[in-house]
Image (tube, rainbow, N blue to C red; front, side, top):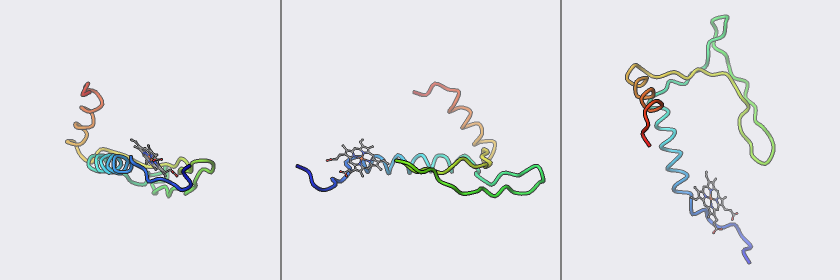
Amino acid sequence: MITHPRICPGRHLALNSLWIAIASILAVFDIEKSIGSDGEEVVPVIGFSSGITCHPLPFETSIKPRNEAARQLIERDVTEDTY
Ligand code: HEM
């Protein structure tokens, strides 16, 4: 009988997948506060869900391609059948 937690054998896959996903997102997107109708930055209200899992509640933000080359790369990735 197992009486203690066992180390996750998928931890390297999980951590490396997260690293690749975050690095890929930061390479092509600028992520900033959004601008409201008054021309001022919208400061997100930070809140978390509660339950078995916990995650941030929805908030407004601005996510845009970093430049034209990044925009083309994103476009190609979503339109081309690369798999
Ligand atoms: C962010 C992603 C992941 C988290 C947070 C996570 C977390 C955990 C934790 C906390 C345990 C120990 C449970 C316990 O005994 O108390 C565990 C076990 C396990 N995980 Fe993961 N894991 C993740 C991803 C993965 C992936 C990607 C795989 C497989 C590809 C995987 C396969 C397993 C297996 C088979 C066990 C059971 C190990 C055993 O009892 O000998 N996990 N995981």
